[in-house]
Image (cartoon, rainbow, N blue to C red):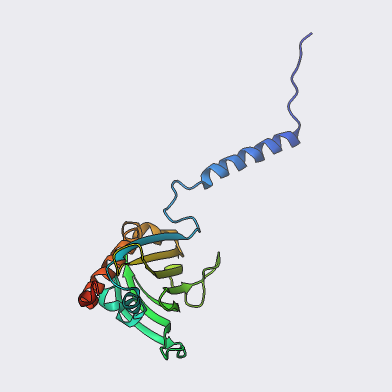
Length: 210
């Protein structure tokens, strides 16, 4: 007795075609390659130097944001636009500044909110540090940009000795920007702290080992 195979039901054929189409669409939608920086996570660059100066004059150099144009790489203009009320010593600290910065083919004006902890750190925040969103001062290139200088006296080394630590956290608005600037961005922290070391030598050379 011969067996005859029956064709599958129409519903089964339709489901098979849909699954096949979905599989082809999934394969076609995969990117051919992934751009650097396509992940929304924040990138961090750091650099550290130990300098033979007391912490106080080094901190004053860092807090002098108006002078950044003189030594910070890629900074073409720096201007403090708002100051704090006088502290207990009568000193006012910068709280908002505009910085013109260009690197990797980009030239942007950043309005930064400054947080000065006298003798300890100076932090500049542009955009939003919260996941997923920019702020009123975010730029077209960076969703967020946070630069923090920290000063720490090293009592274990010959006096005076101070550790300067620089951390830069940033997130691009578009992965294409990360791809274009990749060759430059990894070197920025090192270049900045090297430039600061040269500025310290120019300004504080006579104070060494006092």
